[in-house]
Image (cartoon, rainbow, N blue to C red; front, side, top):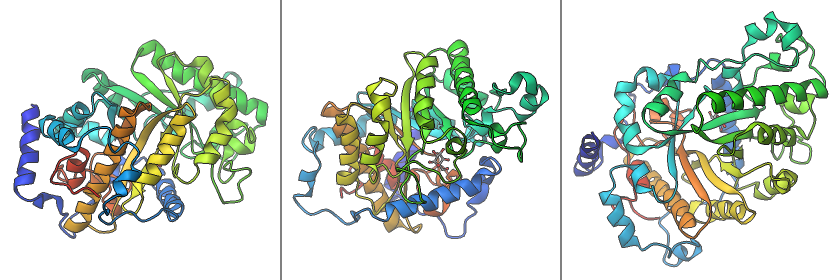
Length: 432
Ligand code: GLA
């Protein structure tokens, strides 16, 4: 089976990567039904926000001059020749990086209902799955059941796991592990969860009530997976995007549109870690996950200090929604290293690298950025730092939340782009 995918890649190489250029005007909407209703707007605004955060990034797009390699701390850890050698022998990403970290993919249910189109690439390349939406609070919380029995559910909202079953079953069938994403987040968490009567326009509850709901939710969700699928989930994004700069946020804690902040207060994220540690099994590593980590490394470290000192948190998930203008070899690498130096395990949880246009030149630049990214992570790991996973946020450009930026490794026909070959450290992709 693996040979089949290898043949596709070889063909792509032989034909000068011709398949990688998106034909202008081609319908990219085929994946349009992958997003849960109501998430699109949030995702777009999240993208815009990321864009704003990333503006401060230094430009690193051009070919690098001699000497720049020195800035890559781990540059000498593995010789270029041995990297190329392994790359050409490996059949897929998971195998290439098997000594370093797991390689994950974020998948929406759309993929599982069209699995024959995608299965080969998935099993050939990835050994970890994240549900793109199906383990978020708005997927797991059960409004009807919570409303129906308010007396018993007031402090203990009902949950169900129907939406994430296709991913769980696929992972079990193919011997893959899962990242759980995400327990406590301001977005994709329904307003009714925070109100007195579990209605969309009810009064917000107070701190103690919401802390009890948070504890019960975390206990139920983690308990469900431990009981039914022990060993499946190896990492949990306990808190997503709690810290922000701007928007009038208090001490860097996100206030905007944040009902966790409105109900519990500015220590909501700390309590999430307390409860997660209480209910997680030992093999579930607990993560704080965020975007723009290069630009708020100090803030994140500062805010998580107490939870870290109390042993409540294991790692930082650097989302890694990047653009080709981001400096991966230096800025991103330094941020990842800074987290490691403070004793955190680091995972790149949502990698995608956007380009401005669909052209061969743009995709070549993107390819070299993917190459840098994987190489930086691998080099850090080989230096001894705990880099334990790289997860790509989506399978192909048509299925991506950043469709307009063609940010992923495969095109809409599942043809590998230079980005894929870059991730494979293939020598056809130039080194920046
Ligand atoms: C954030 C979230 C992800 C996803 C992306 C964009 O990064 O963590 O779950 O929603 O935004 O869609």
